[in-house]
Image (cartoon, rainbow, N blue to C red):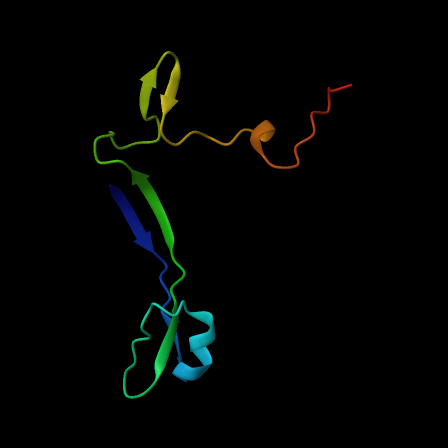
Length: 87
């Protein structure tokens, strides 16, 4: 798998393990550091994602006139699109 990551932000909050316990399945142990549990959120952007056996580039592999891999999003493929020519 090939991919590029960027624009990462690491956010962490200290929380008491007893407050977190009701939210975690009982078979899982809550890891602590210095007596506190931590919640982390890491938003990021990925691009250039492809299987390692596929060539790089936007076109992908041509098969029967269509490419496999990233394709431009057409207006008709967007959620909520309404064809103006539809009766």
